[in-house]
Length: 102
Image 1 (cartoon, rainbow, N blue to C red):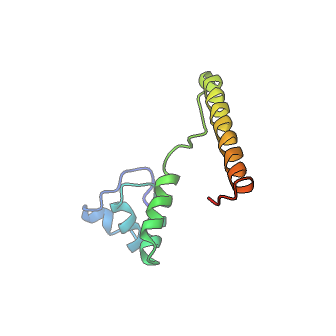
Image 2 (cartoon, one colour):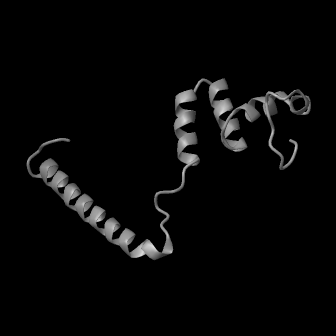
């Protein structure tokens, strides 16, 4: 590619230096790796799945928290785990003791 400068896909001089793949990637408002992933997903007919994965990859992890808010995040995780633990125990009780299948 051309380096650090911005590439305008509609400018003739910058288009003459790009490959066909580079031309398509320059037209997408995403990171190059995500754009290539989206193009390959469209080529292989899995556009919906590629869009979902690209959205996940382009966002920040929900498990990363700032250092000053770690205590609040840990308390939230404990309450979620407590709820899930109770829910799982209720489901097991219903399946085993009451012969109800979820």
